[in-house]
Image 1 (cartoon, one colour):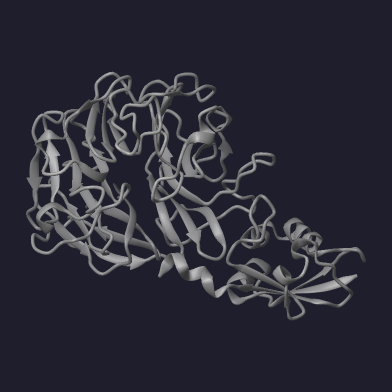
Image 2 (image 1 turned 180 degrees about the horizontal axis):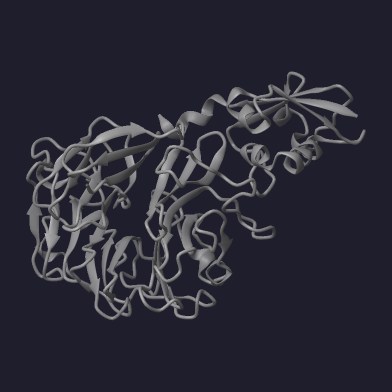
Length: 98
Length: 362
């Protein structure tokens, strides 16, 4: 199935300026599989989103539709064809820079 | 005409200052966004100096970037430059130190990280591999984070013996290898640990910084979390030398690049009052290996200066005479082109300065 990953402005430089990244994944794919696919095609983008342990960075939020995966099954959140996945920086991310 | 470059890593980005006399400076912000730049390095071992930075985004995490055109453009490989290997159970939080190795190893660069670990690059600082001998040390689970995090902040490759490297951590203290990183042993004899009931443990000290001399690598100077120390046997034993200072707390310590008896510190009142004595911005210099210390203050603020200088925010350049540089947590940066006797303002009102390095680049 095909899913679409929407990217915030600071991450678009890693995909040639595109706002979205369409990806083909298996019908049983979960968010972890999508990020694995991002890692294969755009490794620099993937490591902005999660660390080498595979965990979503603390101040990054991932939405499936309008739901934060923290409120769903996190990396195991299931997907369906055509779903829009949105990566957004958390407002807390500037805390170390205040 | 000689050109000097000072790289200033701050909580909110990198700033680059250029000067031909180390008195008047042109400072520009590099294109690194709001990354916190905790480590900077100017590697002068290659024809065109390479700038390296350890940068951490509050959102997007840490990385290492490099520039081969003195900061005009920056590169980052697709592969993570520093990454804990699978099975280590760790993830990189921050790069604390980027240290070129000996001139005879022009492609070797060392990195110290949080969590405390040592990485080695053999491609000029582009990509790094974990030094497993230290990571797998049985002491590691008992190292405790200092106020800045559990960090390995100092890497000192021996000037003539490639098998010897000294590192320092907060906390953990000093560790050394004599077999190219395969095995490591603590080397904290004589260094006090004021935060422990046993004040002289084998390890666990909160060492803030070590400096050594290329020409006499067995002489080392150490700024501790309470106390300044010297070793004359390559770190085998340490003796206190802070008696002549107005306070022996502080973070940075800088060795004179050519005079083995000379070093510089920036004293703070103490653990619970981390401000300069008398609210004066003063560097203290010894020329007799710590027997006596003289204040260096001409050109530095001498009234109402309350800011600290972090462990990597004071350094020397490779000019002759030696230039000295310091940056404060209040965003003030000063430079001296005469070994600290007189100082000039490089910049004011920058974000708090975390790291600073300078070099002759032209």
